[in-house]
Amino acid sequence: MKDKDLSYRRSIFYGVALGVLMAVVFAGGFFFRDWIDRTQTPTAAAGMDYALLDEVQGLIDRSYLRPQPEYAQRQYAAIRGMLQSLGDPFTFFIDPPVAASESDVLAGTYGGIGVDIARSEAGELVLYPFADSPALTAGIEAGDILRAVNGAPVDLSLAQDALDQLLRGEVRDGGGVDLTVEKGETSETVSVFVPFAAINVPSVSWRVLSDDPRIGYVQIKRFTGRTPEELTTAFTELRAASISALVVDLRNNTGGLLQESIQVADEFIDGGVLVYEQNVNGERPHDAEPGGLGVDLPMIVLVNSLTASGAELVAGAIQDTDRAILIGQRTYGKGTVQQIFPLSDQSSLHVTSSEWFTPAHQPLQGRGLTPDVEMIPDSNGRDVELGEGVRRLQEGL
Image 1 (cartoon, one colour):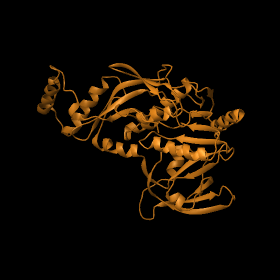
Image 2 (spheres, rainbow, N blue to C red):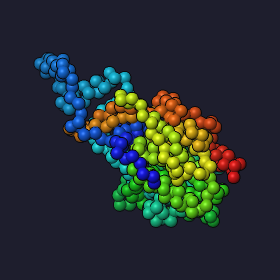
Image 3 (cartoon, one colour):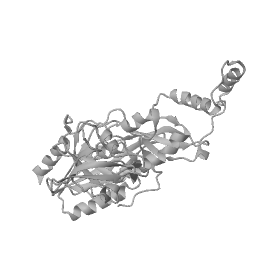
Image 4 (tube, rainbow, N blue to C red):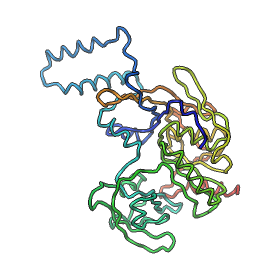
C-alpha cells in the first residue's frame, strides 16, 4: 500500500450503538474519530458551572414524594437533555455497557459459521466461506447454493440481514446449524452440520466472476484497520487470475474507519482531491497520491440506500473524478464526523466535529449520492445491479 500521512489523527465513521441506537447504526453509519483522551477535554467556561441544575436537584431531594432513580441515571438524563438542545442527532451519549460493546462491533466478531451469502442474478443464494471458517472445514465450498436451513427450505424473499441471522448463533457445545446445499459444480445436493464458532468478519471479499472470468468482483463490507491489507490481497489474487475489469460493491456498507476509507479511495484514483474536510478551523483537502492498485482497470461501483459514511466518501470520490460510474440506488447521506470521548465511568460522548465533501464539493449529509445508473431493486431478489454492471463492463472489453 502507498505510504500515507498517518500522523493525521485517525477518524472513524461508523454506525455503532445498541438498543435504541441500533436502527440508526445499521441504517446510516457514522463518521467517528478515535477515542480522545478525556484529560484533554476542555472544562466548562467561567460562569457555566450549572448551578441551576444543582439548585433543582436540591429541591427534588427535599420535596420529591417518591424514590429517585440512581444518581448515575439522573446524570445520564441531564447529559442527554443537554445534548438534545444542540439539535444534532449524531451528538449523543452512550451508557457504559453499550460503550464497551463498540470495540466488539468494530472488530466484527460474532457467533456463526463464517460465510458470505450472495444472491446470483437468478436470485439463488450462493455461499462463499471465509478462510479457516467452520463452514469451510465442514465442506462448504465457494459457489455452493443454499437450499435449506435446519430442514426448512430457504425463503428467497428474506432480507439480507435475516438470511445472515439464519447462519449465526451462540457459540456452545452442540451449537450449530444443518445446511442443505447444492454443490456448484456437480449440482449434487448434500446436507451437512456446521458448528458455530467465534467469527472475525473480513471487511473485504473477492472472487473472479464465474459468468465472465475476465471480471473481478470486490465487495467492501466496512472499513476497518484490516481493510487496506485485505484489499491488497484481493488485488494480488485477482491480478494473478488475469482479470481485465472490476466490480466494486459498496452496497450495505455503512462506514468504518475514515483514514482507511481514504486509503481505499486512493487505490482507485490517480491523483487529485479525494475529499474535503470542514471543521472549526476551516477547510482542508485530502489528496490522492499518484498510482494505486486499481487505477488502470475499467470498473463500475454498486451502491444502494445503505451505502453510507466512508462508503459514500469512496463512491463520491470515484464518481466526481469520472473514474467510474455508480449503479444502484441513492446512497444514505451521512457526511458528518463524530469525535468519541471516553468518560470517567466508561461511558462515552460522541460529538459532531467535522463535515466532509466530495471532490466536486457535494455535501453528503442529508443528500447522499445519485447513481449514474439508477435501478429499482428486483422484487424477487435477483442481483440486477451486478448484472447491469457486468454487461456494461463487457461492452468495453
